[in-house]
Image 1: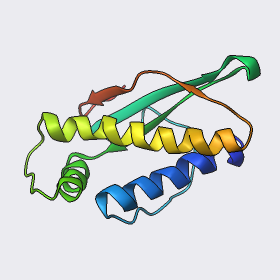
Image 2: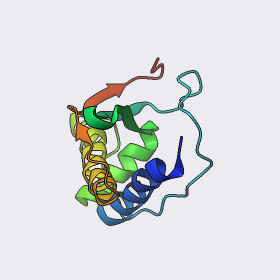
Image 3: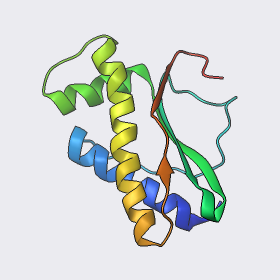
Length: 127
């Protein structure tokens, strides 16, 4: 996948997490998604498309249980200790915020992306 498509999503993820959750994410190596190797327990997913340019894809952001609990605690200024609906829904909210920022950035590059409805998945086995 071309970096020009990845960079807006990476930059938007960093910006949203720094701004909303007061955390400094570290960017690792990018790779194609491998459902066999996912370690996330909560995942927010949003599909994208551009029919004119025949672009289809999705972005997902996944969290371990402990990381999403800490992120939501930071975001809301309230200590959460266990997974609940509010914590789960935050993964979808974060995916939505990131996708909005990334779509704005890709639009400036001349690639208008339409988004689908956000989906939320939870569980140890996200396959």
